[in-house]
Length: 166
Image 1 (cartoon, rainbow, N blue to C red):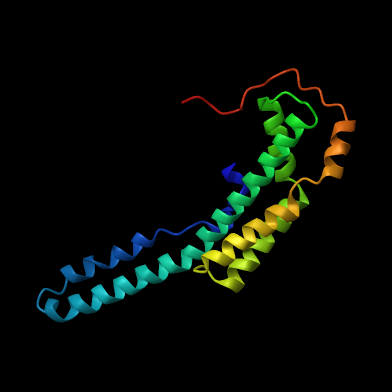
Image 2: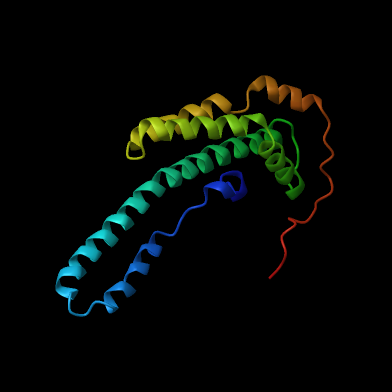
């Protein structure tokens, strides 16, 4: 499920790497009263900058996870209730894989990225409104459900999750 939201090209950076500047202080024992506050300020500012920079990406991923998960659960619920299919790992994996390769997922993620860029990361109400709007816009429509009911899907056999046991 987490593979739906994250891409390798936008991995989070570790904001704690900023503290690698501390060994510089060991080489300047006599200038420490002057250098320590300056270096501490630089380190703190860099750390705050890194955390704030990453908060947009974290909001974007959280919004995408909520929207993706809600849409997938709606599809699974619709298939189980309306199409009268048995809930199984095979059905869940099919829905996950289908959504993962769908155009809707790309559109949803693009809209979320644009929203975070325009609205900012500190406007909680706008983020919640966008999540609700996307879920309503991309939820499974009754027409699609009727189309799925017309198709026959053999769901008698179950299968493994495909996860290695540790």
